Image (cartoon, rainbow, N blue to C red; front, top):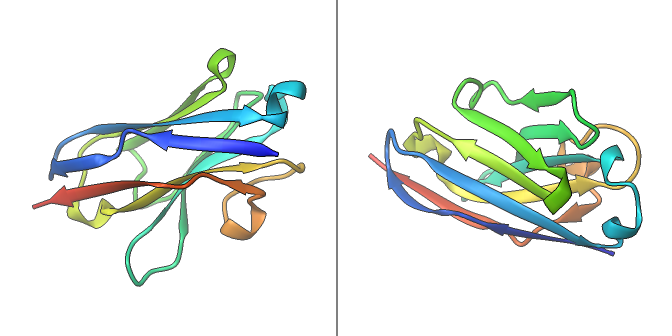
Length: 128
């Protein structure tokens, strides 16, 4: 079993920044960390959960949704088993609950159906 714990959400004004963190624990420690797809998803009220950014923990590949490209950066600290999402120039449309995700099987993780494990989520609210 894998546990994902997000932190760093909050309320900011438009144009502000936040950094989300996701600490991975559990069985993942017993396995090679550098072979998973991890990512950030978000879900606003009344909307479907959508992929925001993903990263291959082995390094060298990232994916960003068009809506956040150039404003958000996904990164990781492999030694700490921690995933980050640096969010800048936040807009009211970015308001949502943000979830950390991990695909334990091989392959990408851009869509919710690809995900094997989810965190509990952290709320991000951007006011205009």
